[in-house]
Image (cartoon, rainbow, N blue to C red; front, side, top):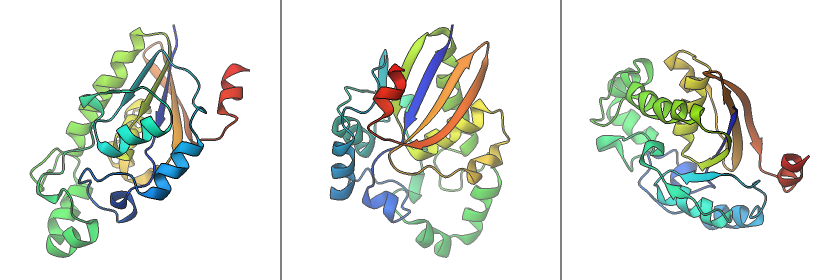
Length: 197
């Protein structure tokens, strides 16, 4: 039994452009337009999910996907840093940001640690082993990074070495309690043809 999980990153939003800890802002006009151009390019799946954030739900809708919001796919809870830019937080709390980026169990912002995020996303991912077929999820970039780190059984610090670009697909294939990775591919109209062939 093999499960194929395609994780799609959201289109651009002000928060993504500003390197802002998400404040649940909507997609920007360019992001909406780009996602709409790609509508219908995602191969059909047995189950389609989305992070509960507005930008992921709107990306899924613009892509033509009927996706179920799933709390397990929520972005890392950033506590009091939510809505602020990394630059502003770094200037105000330099030591706290350094701790957060060096210690995966630290949560100086009062929210969720990266380790907690990995446990949550990893549990969701591993629960999919029992399924067969294709699953698509539009998920926050930090959720996709965490899923890749978990799937590869990489150290927590590998999280900081992964870049997830907007509207890319990261594919994981799972069977026999292990995952294989096909890193972020730009969504293209030929994705449907590739899935059929």
